[in-house]
Image (cartoon, rainbow, N blue to C red; front, side):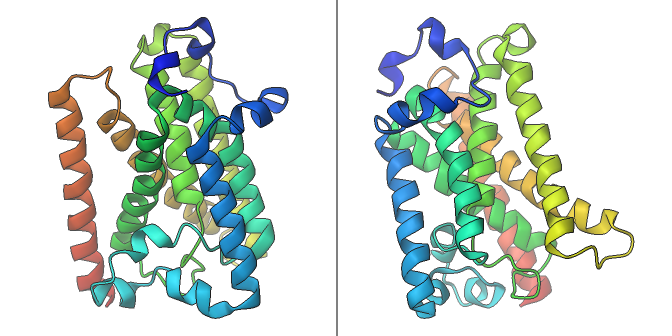
Amino acid sequence: MGEGTVGSERDSWFLVFPITETLPNLLRAPGTLAVIVSSLLVVGLGRLRTGITRALECTTAGIANGELWRLVTYVLPHEGGWPHVLINMVLLALYGWQLERRVGPARFLIVYFGSGALGMALLLGRHPIDAELGLRSGASLAVFGTVAALATWHATRGGRRNPATPWGVGTCVVLLVASGLLSVIKHDGETAPRLGWFMFGFANHTLGMIAGVILGVAVDTHISPVRRGIAAALAVLAATSAIAVGVTRWA
């Protein structure tokens, strides 16, 4: 498992909807499996004791108080309960093991939690993280970052000439459009015009994918150490700058 398997013909494929292959491969992906099990466990416990969710969620006030760990822990509880976590974990099951097989468990976890943290930091720079907007907990940014990192992995190995690249990019676009539509449905079309909520969901999840692209480059050993270092530095700079802007604007 991990980078030792890279180079086979199978690794040149971006599997869009690998129903028959997901379960056996998921069982061989300890990082992805651990995230799924932990998320389901935290949501289950959170339904019994809401204090667990409150302790892990991310809010503007919490970040302003220096509780930066919330940028990581918020991906485990899900404000929307079981429907919310099941959608996210199904998507992670489809794509997480594909990325983990290529970069290994440790780098996969860096991409997953790092995309969630950087995506939420960028989100904080755009608008407050509060109950009204329903953004305090959930793994969507981390999951979308994982898919984007997987697409990036394929793109760096041949660019447009790689047959997997258009499938990866196309999957990212479809997921972003779906997130916009789900945002409209979630808010019962109360916004005027409807495009407002669509762009709300689309733009927010785009931040997770941007984070995934940056971190996907940062952990890819196929890329030169200098470029990986630049990507890592960019991630840190973007996160700290967005947090500073968000806290100044909203706290």
